[in-house]
Image 1 (cartoon, rainbow, N blue to C red):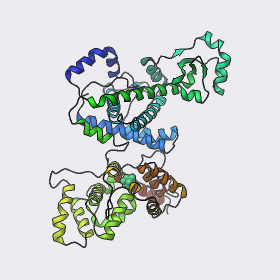
Image 2: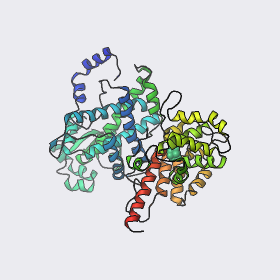
Image 3: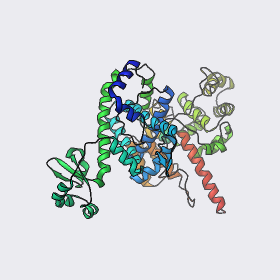
Image 4: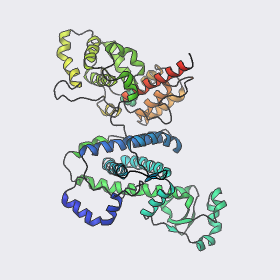
Length: 489
Ligand code: SF4
């Protein structure tokens, strides 16, 4: 990507067959050993990376919340379908469409390498990236069928040596003792691989392999662990190489700002409006007078701003920006926004309002200045912006409030469960602010008697945008209402 023609030609010559092999995408499982070479647009560069980042961010949240693999899969698979689908060569015996497969695999391949550039910069970023990517690879590998798994093993030579029948017979006693109960029962029929012991530390730790002369005898039933180890080790090494090469990156100034933005964290990037709520509250539908009644659906950051606005009849610039764009996102038109802010700033004269505030409100809607249509700010942007100073109320309460004030604010939302409050404290100490926000969302959206709660708990994408919180809360209220109507309450 983005290389000079000379260098591109050189690489094609150097890597020859191998490059073609991975660039052709014959199978969907990819170990990402060879970087992509074709050109893509800057828009694709950013969009594909952001889509993958959304998945990795969700995986990291699941890991942080100690969700097991099954729960993680339940949460991540719907997102994968939406943002990073990877179809098999054939579904139920029917061959999938070639161009669609290529597009999906190309996006997967490129997005992985783009994020390598963004996440190779520090030890911490590399560690988090490897962990999340390995889980993603595991989800894909375990949902692939046996043919696809074999195709992966055939394509990448891992250097594992199969144990011959003679050797297996001679070591039968040791192999059986080192195996699990189920393996013990079938050990005579089980195949084994010889692998240098340092490549399977967790199998040694859990005593699942027989060790002899620095070689681990790994049963085929433990193959997954072996493959995941290969994947994460290769990725770790590749990231270190990339980190060393990054200062010499042959590119213009267009990529570095994107990479810097991506590496700010594993965060959900852009707000994607949810159609199921825009039907009821589409853009331009919410009126200024309705805002107060919608506050129970706002996340803590926006409630804080709203309370300050009502108390002081004023908000400083950064608060107006954060809250104004959020309100724009929930469907306040520019006319309604002008009405809302005018009535809210009740202590200021018409003249002062027109002079000092009107322009900024219209500017946010792309009607003044550079005429950019600004989007509501995501949690990532809010969390990385400047912290609020004296008499300012913008930012994220999970990050910027003292622990006591935060707990009091959450209790004010009706959350008294000590387990939830403890969880929030832990999240905040670990700087997982959006996880704390998601925890509070779950605690405040438990429907008694409702059949199921929309987007709550396992399977729910975590809160990474204030407008996503709002959408989820509105959806939830609608579902509760439907269930109550059906049950004749
Ligand atoms: Fe607002 Fe996001 Fe903080 Fe929640 S995590 S309070 S939505 S900024």
